[in-house]
Length: 270
Image 1 (tube, rainbow, N blue to C red):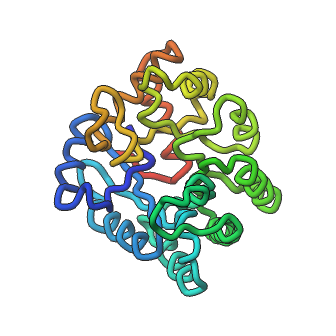
Image 2: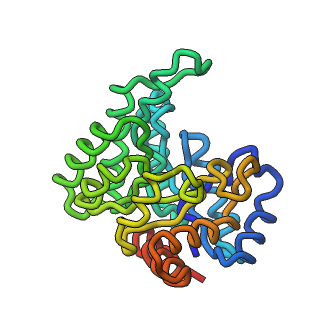
Image 3: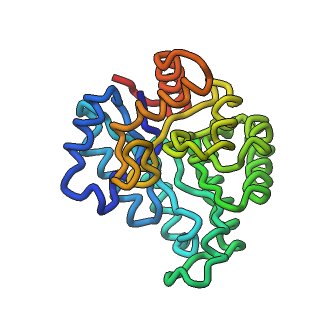
């Protein structure tokens, strides 16, 4: 299996990355994709891919600037991301997108890029993805209409453009619009929560060949480990819940989603 979105570069994993990868491999997760969230962080994830690409659970990186940090995407930063994205262990541009949730929170206590800055940064990074023929990992929080509009513009100018909506939050209502774009759907720990009815419906409806598994670790820990740090070893719990919702064998979910991720990101799967 493949965890297509885990932030191993964050402080929650400090000093434990090797152990986390060993546990992932023991649980049947042989590959992870680690997305960057700002220019400095993207260098860190690229280094993780350089260091851990040949272990029992191989690490690949995505590089990008998260929408809340879009004000950091200077011309120099964009060039540095472009240079990193050309490395062999970097398989996507991400985590990029739009996030209007935090812009609407005056109590957040930290600087967050305004929506217009986010939109410009998203378009610039999509252009890099096209130039390098890389897929994208999209963050979309409370910005569904604008996200879909920009992705449609991108696809109109690049018929080969592809990617995934990570931690999909558009509900059943937007699912067909996302699938019409040719995008994959990333599903993570909340699908195991009893009250996540909309996500359960999404899991039932999304075609298996468009589905990706992800943890978004250290966040969004699946049941029964809620309240603790998330990690790739919990991917089987997500696969099991999706299999139950679809009424198919978990082995089928594991096999098809692994193939989906390998094809989208060009991964070497051990």
